[in-house]
Length: 120
Image (cartoon, rainbow, N blue to C red; front, top):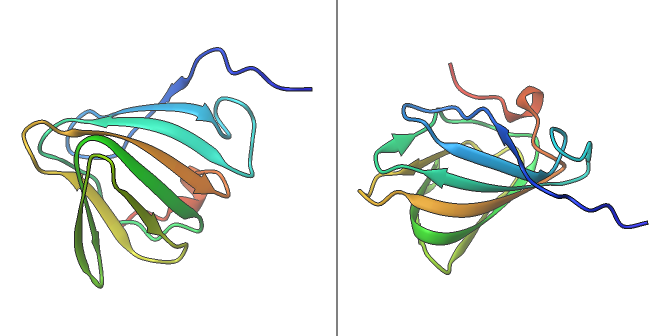
């Protein structure tokens, strides 16, 4: 039977400024461990600690620009673009432009504080 998700759950975010994470599907909202789907809204100047997650992360930017820094360099992902970060890759996300960004993040398996492995 289909499971209706009436509303997202707001989950705590890491970073230097407040960021809104609304999880629609995942461990916190639907009890789903296979995948998580969340809408992120980050203010301009936001950045989070680097991380080496145990999950693949697929991100689609809806508005603004998301900066993705890895050991291989830096990618600025604009509205209408996407980025894939494979599990085990060190990555750091930020929204350096004044307008911030809104984006969707899909994690396989689902995001977990125990498997994100943030720096520091």
